Image (cartoon, rainbow, N blue to C red; front, top):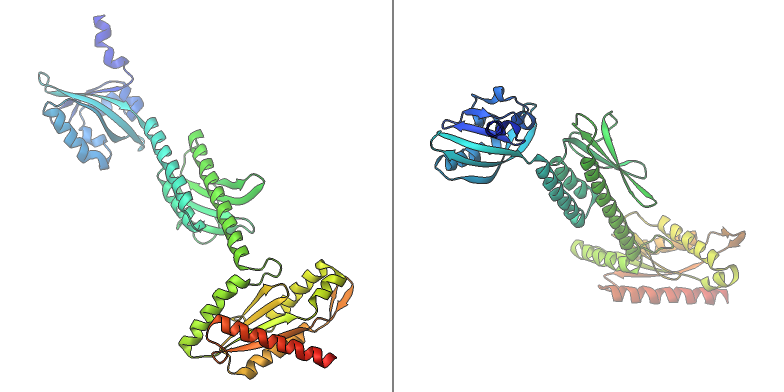
Length: 399
């Protein structure tokens, strides 16, 4: 029994330290080799602070002072540097032995627990970043910063489909997608959908552990959910502002555009023009040729009107067969009238749809800012009345 008690330090899996008042290690049991990578002979005689992580030396010195002053300590944690340079997390139980003038400490390796806690905290941080991200570059910048604390990560890039678009690259990657060997690729996907992939430059001596692979899969899942959310938001936002059939701005977006245009005209003391465009006899196209032909005609009309205005101008579909064109920096009514005539001429070009030749016509009404109104309702009302006057004049000429 006495022999067993004497050999007890050699049998323990925790490291047992006897540390002198000046901080030198007087004794350490064989368990130190598995924990720290050093043999007992390599540690004994050296100052214990030689093995401690630089960031933890100050708190460790304070803790050693507490033990030296006769205060038993339990649960103190710090980090040591293993012989291979890696970090090991240690939890201590220590007390002072007055008769031996030694600090007696038992060190337990809690690295696995700390890594699990760090991964759990990291996964929470990843989920929080995903929840708050409003753009993909913002998302992957946050992911990169979080993963750097959990993995030996040197560089990171994210490419999305279609076309392998580079949406994020750390400074280590440069501006081009990485093509070098040794990058770890993580697919970004959802059921039935492939979004792209994260490419990670890992300074790793071997294969990834199961825990690291699980962490990357969790990261990919969070990223995929954000990509889906942002894509859905973009689709809904686009649908709320653009006409689904023609792709032109709808009434809602046109209202925003004309408000901005009026403000610019007011500041610059310039003119603007609103053209109200209505197809003649469009109902007959639907009745005779069907709604598919009618939709195709509207799409063609949208393209024709857009071809007649400047890139800075706005063409919108505000209802059935009603379109508007918003022109800024217009010199006078003659310039606006020239654009209106061009639109009518281009629209009236014969069009073949479904084997049938259609000859569409349009009536156009013009309102000038500020002559015909300084607010939207006044301009729209004047342009609408002018359009109906144009339509009535055409019918009278055909009669």
